[in-house]
Length: 280
Ligand SMILES: [Zn+2]
Image (tube, rainbow, N blue to C red):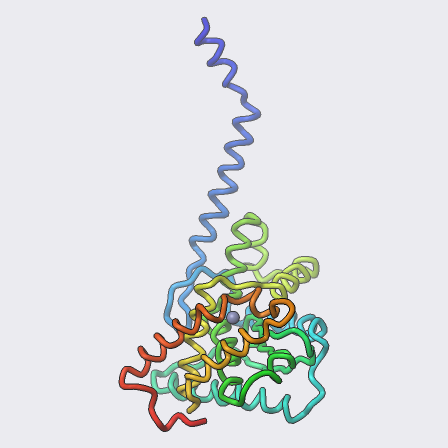
């Protein structure tokens, strides 16, 4: 009898139904995440993203005004503004030339922006090609090669689709509804506002940051810049510490830890040493 009572007590149909429902919803959410496999058009890597490149571009353009407003608007110095754009285009042109030889091209629309913010030492990338550097970081850099390092790193976040990957992971934790909304391209205004907020506040993981450092080194060398200037960028970030840690340090790994990594990447890309021709 004792066993029988216990058995009956466990048979609570409503509880079981709820558990089954939760399990089904969870399984569907995980299943849809796992099914979101797409091949990165640049790296060839298999990635879990729920968006097309066109959707990434649209999302980045939607979030751009908020990013500009948050960091003091666009910097009014036309020479500095055009230097940021020039360096960005130099890096892209070199990559485009390399890709064209393999019959490929860059599927994104890039725009480079210098933000006026004189205090926040940072740089950002939105999905699809919107790249930003603050005036505070720009004015601390020791020359154009270091600027190329910062912009190359941010271009790397775009090419490796780090934002789209992060969004796919968040949709997994938020359940199926979010994933279905993005996959179907149905951007209602509330969902869009939420995604713009997520984009503007996005922090990447350490692996994403190191992958972008690697892109930075590769793009710098391709455009004729000495990739060792990337180490200079890390020193700038380190010394920008001052009273409080700069914003870049809260969204990026400690620069000291990245110097060794960058030196290793440079040695790997240039096993015979950095060519003397890279003098920009
Ligand atoms: Zn980064």
